[in-house]
Image (cartoon, rainbow, N blue to C red; front, side, top):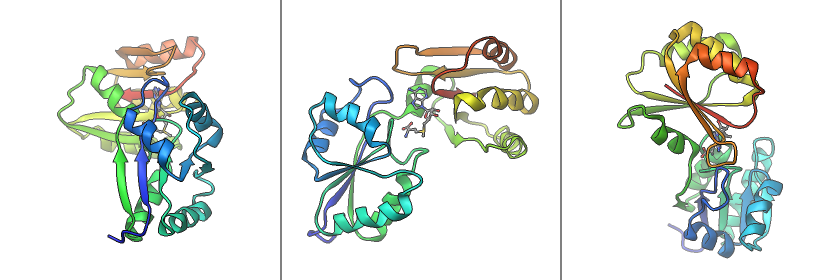
Length: 223
Ligand code: SAM
């Protein structure tokens, strides 16, 4: 390992409740030279809350091609960089993976600062078996591809965790009903936040509920 290069810290941050952050995460964010954040305005809420004065720079899906090399250059020059995402653990269903891969390819030291990850918070309260599970992230956007993915997932013998956005939730539930049958699943919404809600119901019942009520917030489906 080249000792003159900086270190890339992969820092987990809260998935909603600002108190869900480790002491080591705060210390790291205070002492690095630069924080690379998915959305700097969003991360500013966290840094202001904890009086973290480190400069922020954006690293997100649509600037990762140009921003990635800049961050690697900073690390090569000896700067320490913390990577954070909007919520939870960077690299899990967000652009973090590419910078981590590029840092490895450039011989840069990488240190994880573990903490919240939405999928783990949802899994452990789901009541589904936790000894083996499969995390599928976001399903394909197009219904045909989504149904094919669900068909292949239905062969799994493990608990499955899916991330879903509010505007696609109903469509995904409808595809799930068609492919998986009317089984009981878990739908976790807004974990750690004011409107946290966990529903353990049949897919048809969830479709009924979300047809009648406005769909708001962040969702995780587990079955
Ligand atoms: N890196 C994050 C992590 O560690 O879980 C995930 C980022 S991904 C872009 C965002 C998705 O995570 C949301 O669409 C939702 O499915 C899930 N998510 C994040 N925070 C959540 C929360 N508080 N409650 C429920 N789901 C959440």
